[in-house]
Image (cartoon, rainbow, N blue to C red; front, side, top):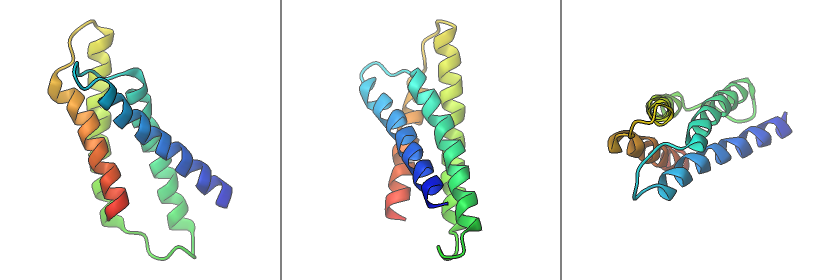
Length: 117
């Protein structure tokens, strides 16, 4: 069970790196890259997996449902913005700056919540 937890944490961090890194890499010409789109899905899947493991664990103490709820709401906003951005890129349309910065900015806020809350 410990290995599964560590594996999920590893991929969760990689997902966050794809989201924030992709945002910073394209900051001057905002867009939503493929890796940001993938990173958003990875964050959702691994975050849900980590939550399930935390609920099943008896040694970790109580799960902070408020924190998980806030992070999930932010992630859903990131995921929706990433999907919209990728569809625009695939159709050859420009990605609105607000969409691109929502993906990166909300991801950065989510990382800050994970660290400081």
